[in-house]
Length: 456
Image 1 (cartoon, rainbow, N blue to C red):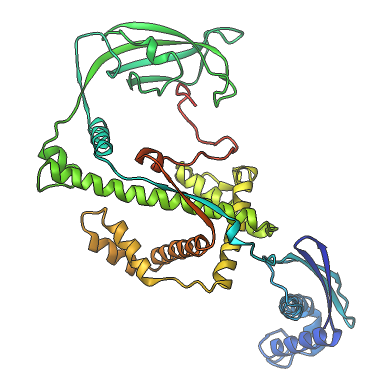
Image 2 (cartoon, rainbow, N blue to C red):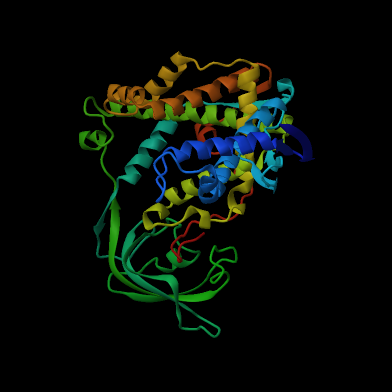
């Protein structure tokens, strides 16, 4: 077998492979001979079909099968000989196929990049430092009460914080389509809490002071940055009919309320202790996540690498499927491939690059999964449930879930490895600032559909 290697561009390689004629022809003849023992043809006894007849009837098919197997094996042998690490299946192009002559084909593919890790000491990380204070717990308790509030009908005009039950119909207010209803601008028996900020500017303010049975038309303008191209900056009118005005009733801090959150014994003190425990868990996870993000960004900035396009394509497909599942499209039979690849390409490249770099850190620093840390992580996750031991047992009986936890732990150990050399500083922040997600980078508009009347 003759092999020639060419670097076409970046990670792309082209192998030209020549398989000797005698190897192909000999394998074809052998295959036809084996087939002749099993083939039954009219006019010939079993096992007595002449070679010429076998070749005429089955030669082409046998040759195609042999060539497929030979190309596959020759490619494996060639990349082994040339010490290449393909990042995906090759594109194969046969150059010549004629009996009695050497068979030549070209295989084009991309390889994994060679990674030389940068200096971890150049990576800068700021670790947030925060405590859960009594005031933070007070705020969380009020948030939980607010989330559990109920609404009851009242006979007065609506005020901020009240909920109204109403119908509305939205129409264009100007231009050729004046008076025409627009898609998504109509609802019956819809509920809206005034002051929630759900609707476009002016909508909720316009309904302040309405009473049950009242009808009111709101003349509004959609924001210029609204997600719907059809409605950006459009003057519209919402014809509203109010059925009910309901005032909010906050739940009391009693045993019934505490039981909703799994606290069945003790008093308010026990409830606040449970709230503190959950907030401290959330705080630890938030700090860990922010530190990890900074480390990963540092890895990317100190290790710029080319990423193989087949791996990026695989990651894009995975992200498409995740997006469809997240927005419920899978139930409707929506094909993830209908989502433009460009929506995910930048993030997919980043994920692939990080995966390759982290893998190289694991390899070079010989990082091994710490089983004790795996158990500690599972126990912490399980502590949020009523029956922690059942959750722990479930993880250890589910190999796929356990593998995911192990990978997360391995990433944490990589982060620790880098932090040991990085420039780490600390910044005291409030609990709220510590758990607040980092500001996202500029990204393409999401494909998520929202109610037309809600603000983007």
